[in-house]
Image (tube, rainbow, N blue to C red; front, side):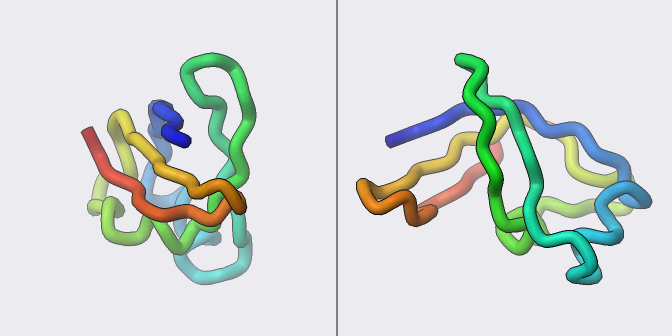
Length: 71
């Protein structure tokens, strides 16, 4: 399964996730479904400005994240 969503979060707002205080990021994919994604997966996309962009996530039949990429 593939899901597409936009994420826009400032560096300061993402800091609790980066530090491990908060664990999951809640996003609404393009068709309105809410996804809870472990914040760990977004660390490669964090810049001094935060995280900004469109993303695609691939999940297997068991609900395990296989791949996340910035589009």
